[in-house]
Length: 421
Image (cartoon, helix red, strand yellow):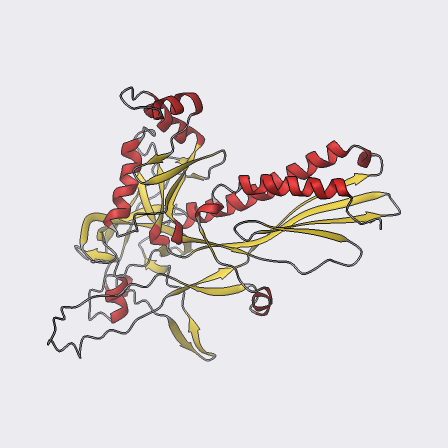
């Protein structure tokens, strides 16, 4: 019975899990997909998840023959993987175990670390793969900054609900400072002054991060070839291979450039002559489309997100449905302009459906150890495992979780960076 959990340990675990729920700040604002454990094991912990459908409409009054206008619906999907296996381990010897308070404190520290790992995983995906870029020339000031994110979302047809913005502490406090000075408003300035609290601004629920990724200065200048296949990306649900039909990840494409010297993953760019469009109506927004560099393949090839779907030359139904760019002009030497011209904190914003959190689950109790399980409201499982070693009289503890985070729709998420002068 050396490995059995005592009553005190069970109570401590229950208290630990209550704090775990409270600490899941960012992860509770993304979509959840609960997978089948056996199915995931057989599929190498990867499953293809559907992206939102987009269809076109036609004029079809009663009596109108639309027989030739039916479109083939293309269901795009993205690979989702249970890629995070986080563990917080610690030990207590027979002497230390006499102090229950110390044991509880270690458990709280483990819980805090695991919750932080989940929040950071969500933030990292949002910060690295969100493609809508709002670059502000000055420091964070408040409403006008968030209103720009709102305008970008609205112009490209992102749903009005479930919008979130996570701000670094300095940028969040800069907004709170502006809000605190608004004497003509009730209550909000008081909260902003006393608690540095911002709340909802321009349709976004805002959150303060005590950690934030940073973006480096974009170095070098280069041009992109915006003719031919570079701007005629064709979305496809599957592709034929020797193994049959395989799913296709349509979130990225390769782009030919003159030179990639100084270009790094994460850079934010616009390409001359390529505007964004409303995802539903396909109307030109009049604003340059923003892209993120996902990787650098070689000296003249980049992988960017999203792909350039212009539907410019004999387009397929899929191109017309998922068109995201308007070609104002085309050139083999279109200038690429970097938006991250100064190092800054990355403030990700997203719609809830853009990012998906997939909880995983471990198998039952291992031999020679005892395990407690807890499942959060979001389906995230915590397991606390205990094992006693008789030779050393040391008890080992480990708090584990298993999950994945997927950017399902890169054009429904973005980043805001300040001080870009």
